[in-house]
Image 1 (cartoon, rainbow, N blue to C red):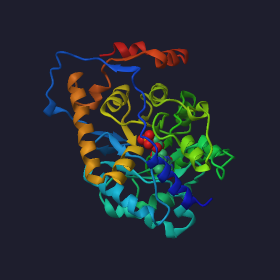
Image 2 (tube, rainbow, N blue to C red):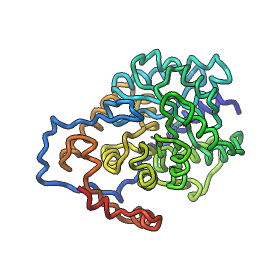
Image 3 (cartoon, rainbow, N blue to C red):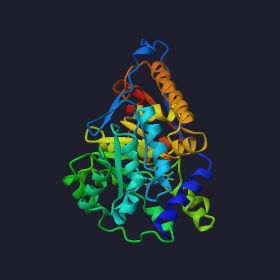
Length: 350
Ligand SMILES: Cc1cc2nc3c(=O)[nH]c(=O)nc-3n(C[C@H](O)[C@H](O)[C@H](O)COP(=O)(O)O)c2cc1C
């Protein structure tokens, strides 16, 4: 199976699947009747690894690496530019192996010369590969993805995952731009977060379970049916966020992703302490099926509703949002307590 046809399968099965939203119903923001703030004053600017972002949302890694993906990346980049969003490219491995594929990534920089763009490779990448990927699109940061369950279910996937940590350590030390390590929908545990922190990683995208499901996509590619327990493998985004933040708070920055698809799970992610949220399945589907304008409308609505929620909890910026009380209950509360994470301080902070 070539990389090129794999890319099409991922796009095809992602587009033909129903969009999934991560379940954040176990996490509640607390309404404040005397808000004391004005909607007009709400400020949603943030930063990632020192890179300023006007909006705490970015388009996460999706595609590139086949001539036909050039048009898709052009549309994604155009939508990112018009919406003022940072954007990550899909894995650039194919272009490192074959320079004919570079154009499908370079189009993103051409379309958005002044935009914030993240390069993307797997954790097999060494410093030389990383520098070539960054150079290819003049990236502002590099994403390194972790996707072991996906590789294992893929017939042609990797089977040997030794050396990842050494590579990540070398990248954290040697790269001249921020390094962001990301999961692709299986979530990051507090143990993994601790390991990555010790390896020098300061930017972590939890890529939790609840949105795009690569076990489902790979099973569809193979024409096999996976049992529910396999399809539910991974750490839900909400739990992964709290676990990663438990380790990273005050030491690094955490990004929410994996089924972040509405203002409620966005606001809750930011209130828990995330610096921003990555979205992939949603922009892909809206832009491919309805066009860029529909995506811009969707983004406008998302931001408006985020600001409405900020006013309802009485804050005007994202630093204040991180201090509002959050009640975590149910199975999520049970999981976190069993894992030794104190959730009462979140419910009582002010
Ligand atoms: C079609 C498709 C291709 C993807 N390819 C990559 C990739 O090359 N590299 C990567 O790091 N993540 C890749 N992802 C994963 C996303 O960046 C993201 O981590 C994941 O989809 C979860 O976010 P979501 O629920 O908002 O879609 C891909 C996602 C989709 C939908």
